[in-house]
Length: 201
Image 1 (cartoon, rainbow, N blue to C red):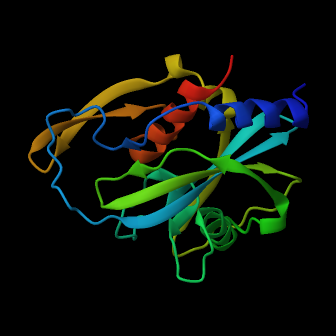
Image 2: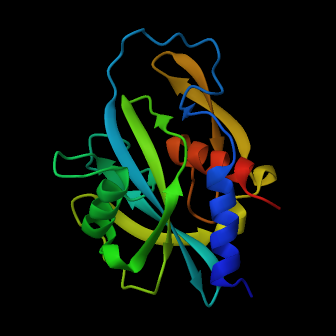
Image 3: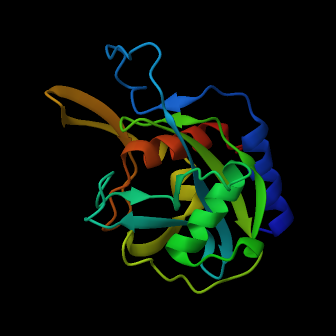
């Protein structure tokens, strides 16, 4: 069974590994992004927990009523507010609002390189290791469902595949890592692929 110290060490090694910022355009080299574009700062929490079923990652399925990424699988997170001292503070605040995760239940291990989304956000992924269990409660206006996936699934590069679909009149390629009824793709899958590429074996 994975010990907390061993898991912490692996995640911290991944965070410390060299790497560049990622984007929703990584697999689409023909896309030319406008110079001087202004991105909105955001943060997401990558919440990892040791549970009886093994090491799990918490994810959400976003409400179909949301303006951005409706119905998609996502990390808990959102835009930085003026009151947020940094990305970690924003990620913890959003996780408490969206899935009822108490901030003091999370040990922040660090951040991954930022990720630019097609919707104009500069997202900082904040990796957190849960200190203890909690009772997940979805925020009705934003979250349709809360679920977990095995961390090993989403930190093994070979488990990812590349698919494509039409977006704004052009074909766009993206990473996917499906799990049961859940289709993990887009920014969430790209951030997880970045983590997978950095995880020590």
